[in-house]
Image (cartoon, rainbow, N blue to C red; front, side, top):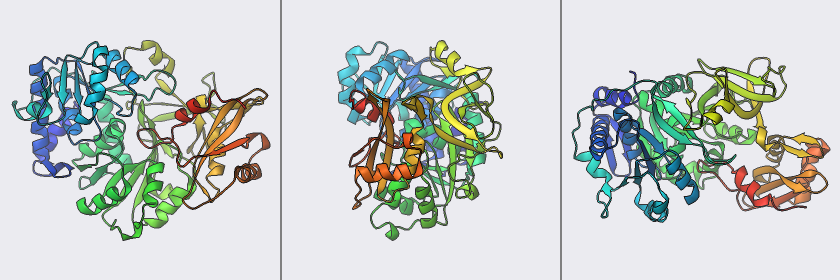
Length: 507
């Protein structure tokens, strides 16, 4: 197995009649999924999509993501799944930067595409993710059903580019992280082993597939698991689907796990089929994981640490969830990890520095941005921008992002440390800490908090609570209450949105 499409080709043979993807009334066997992927590959080739061309997708979660993800690489095309939360400006920037030759659009986003269409410089083909297409467009189902289902022939190279995932643009314009066949297959093997995935798993997708497709779709496809797709995250629907489809696994983030715990009438749902939950993407509050394991004692939890550019750096095993609270585990198989200072030198055990990592799982680099690649990679080591510390046994604790450090009165404050204290307050459901411009302090520490349903707390109470557990200069100078905090597409609290909201507010 050398190429990404080989995963689906094998599943179409070995698991021919096994359910491959399920979404609502749609149920396709792995043979059918592979045949549709092959038809798509031939269809795109007939349209003139050539080896190395970029094909973008703008859609919420859809079962057809699977056939595109594995089918386009069969002809050497490069898949570019787009963030459906992105602004029109960012969509134009991404599509022009990667020079996409084809764009697949779900009907609900057609108005968005019509509005930006005059600004798209390279898109030659518009495909609607539907059975029928308006004039001037092509129906996806035509491509998936009306072309040969045999495996397409192509002169592929394991080191060539096949996937571009764009970052959120938190430090400027979105950057395109580029993966190769080799990098993705290596990632699939490592994550299958480290997450404890099984051939018999039935996995549920509710996180946006444009972001979680590698850490969820890829290894589970490798072993032939069944994929159940939800368009979006909705706690009651998640629990109903777990019962209906006998789901054994899903991928989550701490925020979605907390919301699943808060689901009304939680005790009425039958979750006995669920055996494993994997989670990543943001710090896990101790209260959330403790409550989760108490509520679902039959479900193993696995935490892992990764990012768009390096999806599987560390893993914390099920038996370590409570004994290693606050850590994200140890490096996964084949990964090397260090914590270094600004000069690239290893810091002492327990000291904070930047996390760097290297292995075959990392991206090749950024699309058409060699200068950004050079800034992020030195001697094979990828610099993550995350701050962390290692203990004597090699467990990694993350303390924040370098760019998020607040400098108040000349002192460095790590937001995650303050947030960790706020989460210990019984009334706090969500918390984020940012720096606000201040004429005296440079930056003042500002906490944005959402309270639990029915709970009450005053700003002065939370400031005093932080002062009891932190040095004086680390406690917030102000607290603001919101019904809920803004989220990114995958459910993480969006610090960027809060920073943009408050960056011009002084005082």
